[in-house]
Length: 394
Image (tube, rainbow, N blue to C red):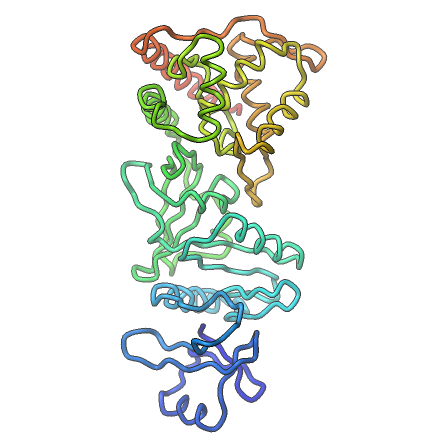
């Protein structure tokens, strides 16, 4: 951590102290942690950024321990960035109510900045985010740029945990303190648990504003390219489905077997990137294939009935959903928009809130035929996306 208490005052390593001053102060009276009040040791080496650290026997719950140079440098630059913009930035303030300490905070505007370089679980992320919400604090999660790898044009690999931090415009913000550049990925569409398709915008620190964290800085449409990549993933689902061993895979595979089909024969209208599909963590070809059987056996049905049946499988740990605290949708968004997709395809009819199957799902009897139909669907969907874009409709 970069701050500590000394004789009732907050001391920051960014305030231009000299080594001799810090050592002399420490000899007179120990610096203390603002949270646990235990003594902390000033680390004044030549390789790492100066900082304070607890002793090895400390029981402090503060999560700032074992910060890397990369993290400390990023925290320093973000603090100075906000200060130079004229914001009343505070470094590492402790919030007693939530017992949290953001990296930087703008007290007047109630805005917290978290520079996240290490992996944290989705549960911990939600806990910390909700802690800020309870105090009416707006939080921006900025990820260390080391956490993203560019593997192609508009194609990136990230940690599956980081997806939970999606903000408006399906956006993630990364920052590299070494190059002092923000990388903003927007209109993110997951292709797998760790591979995403996104528009990329690079912004130097000196050109970045706080408002830019919420703005969409890209305007390009890449629907055709995305559908090509999605169809390539769909091909892997068909050819390599036997490699899956999740509860969802075993459950859906058993349903296919009971109906005399192999899992690789799933209908082409299953495994599609319908709007909001990313709210369900389970691969789309599995939960959408399950819906095809649900429709066949339970028609007519309502959205609520489908949602209840799906949620029972979630509670049974068969299907998995994702929570995005900065987005407004949920797993129901994914389910309902997939029903809209099937309506558009003429497979369903809706009347007075009840959905009825009017066309049977077509299961494939050869892998080659399945891949051909997938390609035809890709071309059609890419054309539909262009028409929708030109007409201005979503």
